Image (cartoon, rainbow, N blue to C red):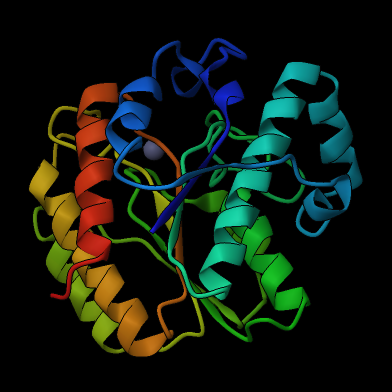
Length: 250
Ligand SMILES: [Zn+2]
């Protein structure tokens, strides 16, 4: 397991909950020392254009600090995806999040679709022929769905908001096959976050389910990218258990 990050993600870049001061520090502290942490680099505009329109790219560029960090977040997701292809699971600790970013517009604290761009890049390079995107954020990843509209190489899954979320995920994975699994890892379903639903231990169970699926059906090719999560302390401990879970057989 490898973590990709950049210290610029500690910068505040706008006034929204995903950009809030101090949001990533507890997670970074928990992961530091447990996993190798590699510096990511910004993606190229040509990567962004794999999913987004030029007019959307230009509109984000009008706020340079947002563009810089959003391009760095995409670069972090791409690095995690390449690591997965090269045989090591990886987690991208980054912001802004991406799953509400559609080809030509974005909302919900998102600008560029980190996961969609990283997956599209692997598909276009012929490194995979299919991908499963599992999104366990509290919110529906409309941007990811719009990014792969009509593309039957990519399956998007997000469970319903209910107490048996983990069982729903297990049942879905049992009847699914894919070359790679990309995880939109949002932690805002936590009992101490907006969703008020999942325990810290549930994130460990989710990690274990996804890690096992990836080893049994995708040759271990899995990467995860941070989406939401607004209680920085419960997010940090949930990320830790999720990553531990990925390395555990269920
Ligand atoms: Zn969310």
